[in-house]
Length: 138
Length: 80
Image 1 (cartoon, chains in turn red, orange):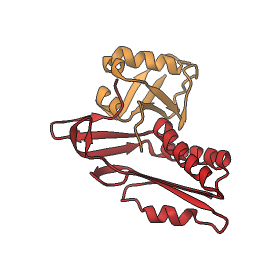
Image 2: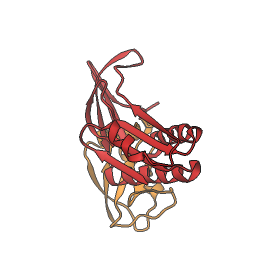
Image 3: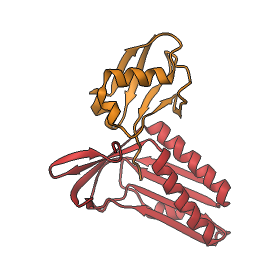
Image 4: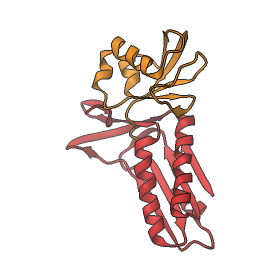
């Protein structure tokens, strides 16, 4: 019912989508995060992601379990990537299925919002003239 | 007691290494560890927040440390 993966290779949106399909599903929502080419007007060259891997997986699983219960999901798949990502590449894919669409939309938003607050994964933005750990300092 | 702390993200830059070894009195707490770090490394004052994980779970400041704990510094996360 729950598929959590932390991967060192490109993610497959299709794999997440396929995992959550069930005969009693009425709607599937997929969130795909992508690496943007700028932050506050500065050109981003690439992003480096790192994770405290065992805890990142267990925290993603906790969020997924909560989402399944809170939104009565049929299935959920959360894949997150680590390593160096270029512009346009995909660091995260979240797919959820439920009997009705509203729960799926709400669940998807809950999962990405909570993931960004609690899962021990960090990204460093690399600019042409420097680098910065995102959100680390005010 | 002798402790080993793993440093992720910006905390590795502040401390200058991934594995940081230190000694604290027996029964020291998570808050004591944070106090030690901010005294030794002024860079911690620049962080929005610092959480400590003990054995793969977020720890409260009042929790007691043990020598065989896996202690990890969790600066503000930025996944997704």
